Length: 211
Image (cartoon, rainbow, N blue to C red; front, side, top):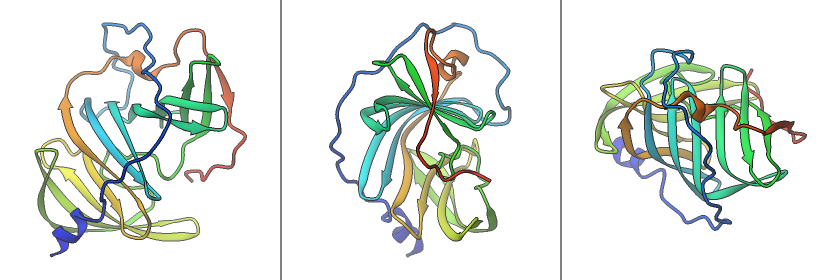
């Protein structure tokens, strides 16, 4: 019963957005080794839901580094961005703005997509059972977290083979993500670097930071 309730906690809804073609810049054929180790490199199709809106993206992961290429561009304070680059090693998220040749830089937030099983502020983890996500065997956990100002519980599905977080559903708010497809493969380092000729523009919006 618990597995059934957890699986259905994240129903799909259509999000209307402005569509922007994927931005492409030259990619090196080499694969660097200067990224966090211990997590397999992979690509996949991601479905994320926040407050009734659904977002779909192609994800490329190299260690803890992430690159999300959204099917429909997301709105930022400086316009629409179809590409988001997550760099936990420097505590930043970059939104690529091709019209401005800029990267909108925001601090890393609590809601950054986790790759590793341990969640920010995790205090307790209980095994629930086995399940299948994106055609892969997964272990389901009930996870409690304590973050500044609030407690939150999640259902978390972890790939049994690689340890990748395949699905995460908040039990306390409308927030979740899951992979519809995962492919283990090396990812070029330049996917996660600033494109040539772009300058960084710090965000002026209030952000909920990771502490």
